[in-house]
Length: 224
Ligand SMILES: [Cu+2]
Image (cartoon, rainbow, N blue to C red; front, side, top):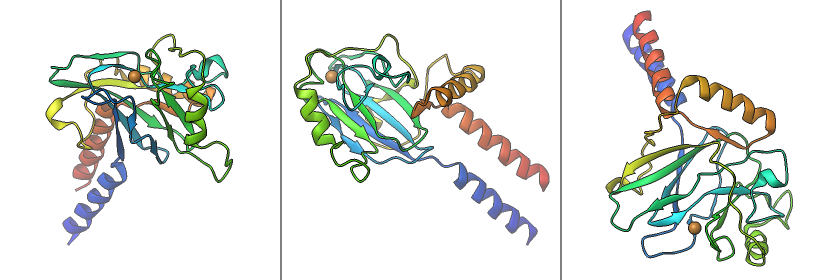
């Protein structure tokens, strides 16, 4: 009886730790200049994993009013920038870039390669046309079409890069990270920076989430 109760509480601990991962395809094998999907709704705490198809794309955050330019040029927000992700047509690994959503403020994203931004490689996370009907993805894409420049950010920020094997693309499995920068110290400092400067996303550390889950499970086991 007691064992059942504890087993059930262990289950609820693990479901509380479960994280929603939204997968976004960046480009496609046949060269589509788009994100798919190009609009998604994500709650605070959700993760968004971008999976890069062959070519050389980016995920870069802009303001609504200045598509195709890093948000850092027009606000004090560092913003999201994956860096350029060169992928050959024969690649067997798919590079990924994963962010955690901090809040539901609309996040406008574009590809800073060549004229991809102008050609439709733009998207939104948490579009909010109830709050402002003019700030739709459609309006953002119309603005992007007429943008006179397409700029990359200085260096990648606010996300975790990794790789998954090509065969698993399209699944919403937990992202794996091969980044060597996933130290706990950089994680805590980057989250506090991001909170301070209003970023709507931060780096996620899947390895730490797993460790936390393991520690909690251990705690439950010891309680037994
Ligand atoms: Cu692109």
